[in-house]
Length: 198
Image 1 (cartoon, rainbow, N blue to C red):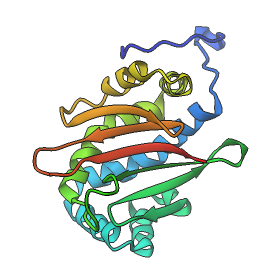
Image 2: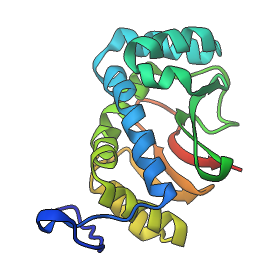
Image 3: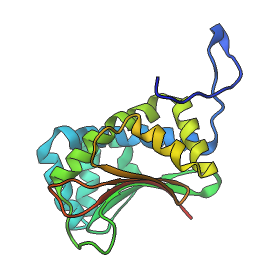
Image 4: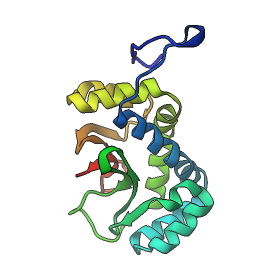
C-alpha cells in the first residue's frame, strides 16, 4: 500500500499484531492529538487567521482558548510560541517529552506567521498525520527509521502521504523528524516538526 511492512506475532483471526516501541506509541498519540487542530486550520480561514495572530503575539491564553474549541485534548498539554511558530508538548517515556508544531526557522524573520501558508501546510500533512494516528505499523516503521538514522527510509515513509512539491526536505533531527516546506508565495521556509526535548 505505502511501501512499509512490519513483522510481529499473529493475534486472533490471523491479524498481525505490531509491537510498538515507546517512540512509535508517542508518534501515534501526538498525531491523534494534532489531527483536529490541523483539520480546523486547513478548513477554517478565520481560525487560521486568529491562530496566526496569537502565535505572532505569543498569546498563549488565546491559543489555549482556541484549542479548547478546535482540539480540546491539546488544551491540557504544554504550549509555546516564539513569534514565528508554535509547539505543543507531549510527555513521553522515561520522563522525556516530545514537541510538535510548525515554525519558521529562527534567523529568517521575527513576529511573522502567515495563516495561508499554515493552511497549506496543514492540508499537506493531514494524510500523513491520519496515517500515523490510525496505523501502528506505520508509526513503528517511522520510529525505526528515526532510531536507526535511516534518512531515505524516513523520507520515503513521509512522502508516501505528503504529496505537495512544496515539501523540500525530510530530515531526521533531535530524535524526531523535520519536514521543510517552501511555497512560492512566501520568501520564508516553514518547518513542521516532531522532536524530542532533551
